[in-house]
Image 1 (cartoon, rainbow, N blue to C red):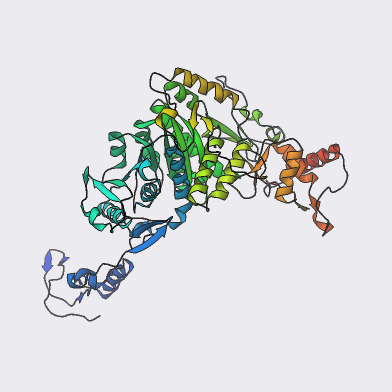
Image 2: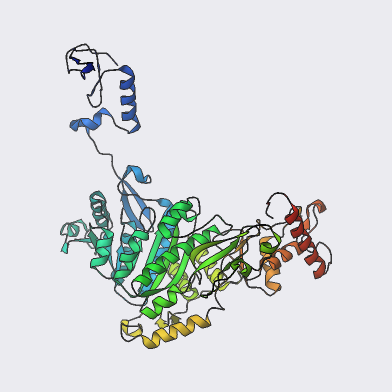
Length: 576
């Protein structure tokens, strides 16, 4: 870096009192943008900013401005062209996350199961980016779907069109078919399908057109697009919502969750299921505002995202039934017990007495808080999950079969046992008050749907079925076996502990939300007593798992009560 004494450019005048000095002084020139800098320290900071932004001299010279080549990736037999730095949202227009492969496969199986009901389906990928999701739909489902891929960014729209040509798919832009796609096809090779690519705001597009299937996957929260999605979604259609704002949903930014979802939450042992119920409650409120109800097909909360898939039920009766399932949760911060607040218009003097535990009476001060509003009904539809498993086997998606099986066991709240193929070829299944024939030759005549005026009997059947299925729904939330372990005791293996709970007469299953979580309808006191009964003292060394001693049930109950009294007398609020 050399100092320049030539009169290249006048230095910024210095104002001293009323006199103005226009003296030419020494200065520096930036080799990147040719800016004139007076001080050497300012020059060093100026160059450092260029380096941090990745700017070089070649960026400002048109002759040497060479664009780096795009990389081609392959996923599920679909080729996709991605830009450099495709996995960093701040450095690319078309974001592609390889870690969301599981999410894309779940949505594909959902659409494949819906395509068995009626076809063709009008499908929308509202935030296309590279277009990988819509490309997989069109390439593997063919004429059963009519795919629309939308993105507001012009560079993303161009990349989506190139990816369509790369996968031998015709592109329709503004209702005009591209003739260039025919030249790309090789001899003897037929076109696989058509994809409509639009450059429009997602809210505007969903207001203008009706769809059977809508997938929302914005960068962050999806609450800004829910009203538009339910405005024109067809009856018995499906809306899938992917939320990646896990910092607010997982109670790391509670003020953001209150701003976006209107929910009061804290960090609990079941925080992932709490996040899923928050998103479902937001979806249910958006549907109810449009006089529509929902039935949750499944809700998944993993490390990077929360995915909620719901079926839309048209009519004010369905909307009212959906709104009733949004309730507040009473959570005990001492023992982690929880229960949904009972319905009623009367104000209770102490609503925390609804909790099964006795912490509010034995502990000083307030031990419970009110969380929500949350979705209080089931998070899974067993029949639809079995159809998704059948589609994953049919299309060879091995990565998600284990997860879907776990969801099926979790929806039925049964321990994992011998599993059989759940979907015979000729099976009529009842979902949402309608019978769905799932044979390969499904036609619109075989699909019984509720219309705008014609759905009174179907809605009545749906309401009756929902009342009778309350007892068969899976229990809400779960317990983490490590959070409730006893100090100085070795816990039994998780599989054996599930058997012990089942032998005691409780419904029990594992959960995908937590690898060490146990979903059961057993109260927390019974859960801890069974855990204590089959735990072994640490000092016994290599003693085999089983009973500590042939103690009676009264002795076990006394030990649990003594442990709770010791906790009450402790000076610190140390949890079990």
